[in-house]
Length: 168
Image (cartoon, rainbow, N blue to C red; front, side, top):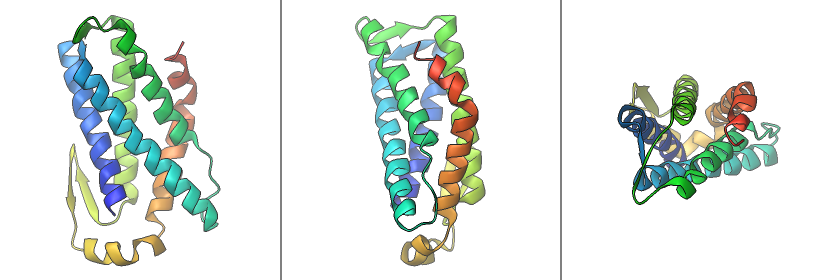
């Protein structure tokens, strides 16, 4: 359950950071580092649970979600070269990419909310539900985490071409 909470928290935090970046039209070094760090959490979740689900024969790993997170990570890692000091004023093309990524994260969050057990997601906040104790003990037996992986992979596959273009 902690991994699912970390996944949700990382996505919500990145949405908040991206909202700030869009509003200020500036990317700070701290923003970039936080976004990339949160993407490590997403990558670790999708990698670890995809491997587990494959070993348990519950889901045939596709890897689109991991690839999407890695692509977004690459998009922001490339910005370090362009950062002059602490801040970078963003051009319209990169701001459009940031807006696209924010909407992609929102889509992921909606899909996760449809499948997650133990938490309720409202807007950009999440709360434990009454069944969180049961989930801590028996959550691996439920299929919600497999459903989350499938939903994240499906959404990532839909957006694969657009995300890859951001690296060009």
